[in-house]
Length: 161
Ligand SMILES: [Zn+2]
Figure 1: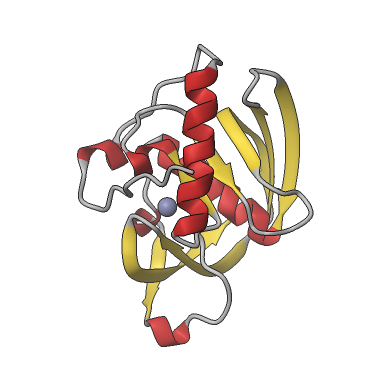
Figure 2: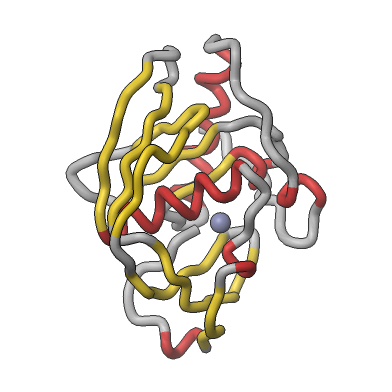
């Protein structure tokens, strides 16, 4: 188990375009495993590589549902539809929460830890988590999409990291 340090805002690494992963090796496996340990340790539902200081297109999402941990390497958004407004937070912004408008549905194409391509569809909270993490890989932070900031007392359910 290897918990990495979370990079908090402000930091240049959080606002850059991450590089596509080309080599699917043991080093990548280690990064993914460490990201998982770090996400669990800090009670997040997702984590992107720049949040542990790496400029690579690697992100994970786990909202504790039947899908388990979704590992997204070089993810691309193929399609979105609908709309949802809900609260979000981010491990890189401790204690900050805001309402963010996102598509209700998303279809992505990504690679797994072995480099195999897959297509994945998600709705609702899972779609929100996936979109939040993919944004991180392009240097886009949730604060740029917040329509209204929330007090911690206004937070009811889960938050996105
Ligand atoms: Zn985040």
